[in-house]
Amino acid sequence: MSTSGAARDQRRTRGALAALRAPVAHRSNALHAGAWWLWALGLATAASRTTNPLLLGLLVAVAGYVVAARRTDAPWARAFGFFLALGAVVVVVRVFFAMVLGSPIGGVQVLFTLPEVPLPDWLAGVRLGGRVTAEALVFAFYDGLRLATLLICLGAANALADPARLLKSLPGALYEMGVAVVVAMTFAPRLVSDLLRMRAAQRLRGRTDRGARSVLRVARPVLEGALERSVALAAAMDARGYGRTAAVPKGVRRATNALSLGGLLGVCAGSYGLLAAEGAALGLPLLLAGLVCALAGLWLGGRRSPRTRYRPDRWGVRAWLVSGSGAGVALLVSLAADPAALHPPAVPLTAPALPLAAACALLVGLLPALVAPVPDDQVPDEGPEVRR
Image (cartoon, rainbow, N blue to C red):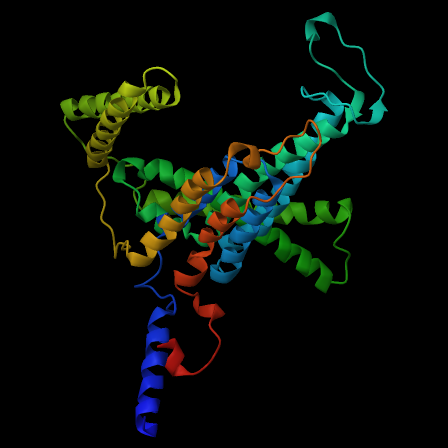
């Protein structure tokens, strides 16, 4: 092969690799916020099906890696650290309550004995103090770690998805409820951001940022800032016509209420039928009928809040891949591991084993770190050709 032919092949190879590389995120190719939430809900579903600490730790690592690879410098992107700390608090509180109030699983490996407080007869069945066994603490740790992993998965979605763009994609009937949820979910990250900013200002002034006195010193400006933003947000929402509804005929309102209520009842009855041992034959038809009624109710309910969407987000191939990776993790973890491997016993005490098939299934959750568009602030400056 000539030198020119080899060079041409190398250019083709580089072109093919560049086509597979995730593009730099901009306004037109930004990933749909719903894809991030579906991916996170898939991870949370997988976490809810196991108490194996090795799998839960791997799940937290997967979520943390994707967040580190694809989060931006927006204020809500700093929420993941807050959810990690919240998860640690959940584990500590769960173990503490198991130590103080006892555990129903008992155990024979007594670690220490707390002074037991006698309780009145009407609190029969409740114990305060007494023996603390290793089996009870291990069981509480597994249970708390599962709840903490659920919170961390939701924190990953909170750090990656733009809440304003997610709100824009909601149906009209859910718009007001979505505004309340978005405001509530963005309050904690902004509060943490304000707290970090105030502590940095304290350090620059030569004051200590540790201790209860420092917390009390920064609490007042942080709360004042939150109150001022709330007032400004209320004024902006009022100026944009939030809460104003269009006039619809009485029959449409009644049909909307009937379809929404009937849809919810159908979904509940269908879900119960699918989960119960009896009535599985009627579960799926009831569930489908309930979903159809609920969607029809949402469509009719959207007529009360007519609004336009400026440049709506598109659900592209990368959004399908990201959401599909979360669904794949939830499905593959259930199929790849036996129940004994997903729930290691605490009585008797045994070291948890890592089911390799389930661990490999969790790695599917890393797909968003490869296919999602790269935030502009994480792209190394390699010249205008790479950024294009």
